[in-house]
Image 1 (spheres, rainbow, N blue to C red):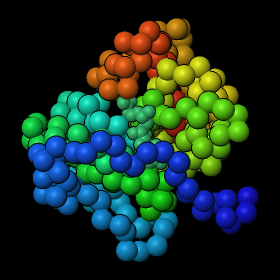
Image 2 (cartoon, rainbow, N blue to C red):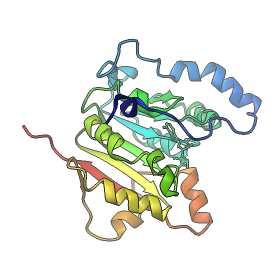
Image 3 (spheres, protein in one colour):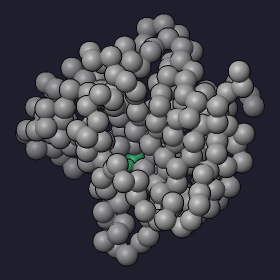
Image 4 (cartoon, rainbow, N blue to C red):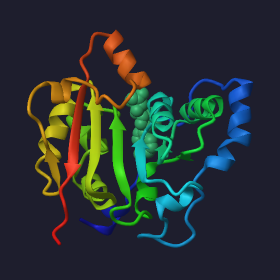
Length: 237
Ligand SMILES: C[S@@+](CC[C@H](N)C(=O)[O-])C[C@H]1O[C@@H](n2cnc3c(N)ncnc32)[C@H](O)[C@@H]1O
């Protein structure tokens, strides 16, 4: 891989939507600066310990990539107060929506990266995350756009580096192309294991989680979500 490919973090999605209501603008001005992850000053790798972002020395740190409107992340943060949650989202309206959840539920265990997650990941040390969720990622269904999909060899290497032994990489999708693509790539990666015993292991959302906005839309439209859970194999001792 050329150096250019290794550092190419071009982003192709939407960053802004409809104008925000005054209350959400206010949260962007007042609450976001308190929760935003400041850009690390030291160069990567391993220059930012995610646990250090939280006041309560979290038992574990879980990352959600592309949290959308934040329903799932807020639900998880409320249900697991001892865990530190990092959410990354480039879509400003989504960030404002998560801020509303954080504010209304007084969540003290959420930190936000309101930008492309990929450069941030390079700063975290190996084994520093215990769970990474990628829920209903943009499917980029055309073959010629496949390189834009988050699941791919380069990001999988990074996810494997970041997850602690036994850590979980959750991918949910309602798109058959993305489901097939994920099942072609992740179980083949030497660091991941897909532990499945029967169809409920991918048909049923993990019991500890709540539906995301996109999942609700998919179900309402008659599409069937798949919930894929991969586990980080133990590193050799
Ligand atoms: C189809 S939406 C799903 C949103 C949410 N996960 C849900 O299930 O409702 C995908 C989201 O991922 C975000 N996204 C895509 N690439 C991203 C990246 N590299 N870093 C952060 N967010 C990203 C998009 O802005 C978008 O909001």
